[in-house]
Length: 179
Image (cartoon, rainbow, N blue to C red; front, side, top):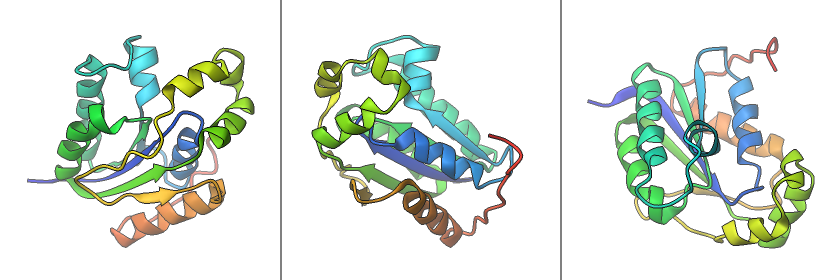
């Protein structure tokens, strides 16, 4: 039996705008109806572990996402989500959701470095580390992803995701009272 929630997956290189898009989409919905499961929050903050195969963060992201989906939430999983390490988990979560929407940010290294330079994290994450993390285009084999390039502004990406969610039967109710 599928969970009643809708899954949204935002994947791409560091600095591509995934977290900003996830927050913007979440603000389009009433409080308590849309959860953001951030790979960085789980892996780097909660567990403080490296991004390597078979680490705890992969299973924990899956459990959190399934928990949220089972309660009927729009569940946004966002992060680099390297295809080799995270594909099987994402496929399992998607197969348990009422609907699943996948978006992949496909930006050049130069563009991700430009965007990164404008973020607060730029002070603690040097460009050399961003270069090490960069892996280019990595499509998932089990699904079709909407490919987002550098020409898409934040508002256009947010609008597209909300339209796609509406097509699944979800309606937006912005919560303008919370940041």
